[in-house]
Image 1: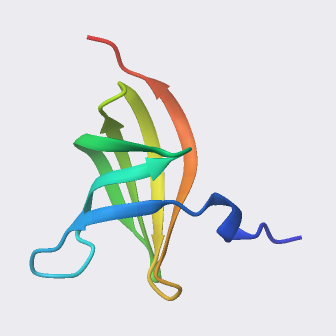
Image 2: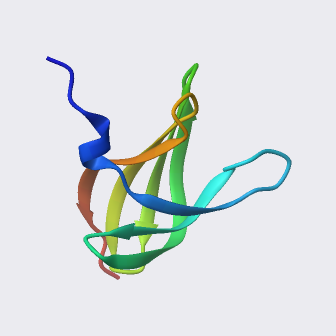
Image 3: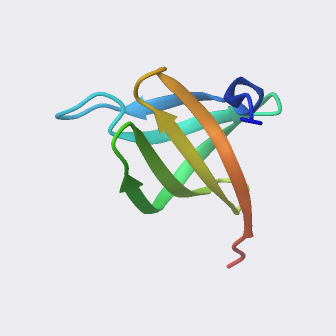
Length: 83
């Protein structure tokens, strides 16, 4: 059974330079807008982009972008970084 990605959908504001949705700058999760302090890693598939980001709540999130559906999703909360 395929998971309905709309259940993980999040709102994302992006920096768009030479291409649209180049990297996330903030996202809304559980009614709270989190600012992306740093993109720790990123990788690309044929129709998807993934970003491992450090947000202003000191947590690390994995968020994905589906190019075909123009849909951002929260894939996983990876933990927190204190310092």
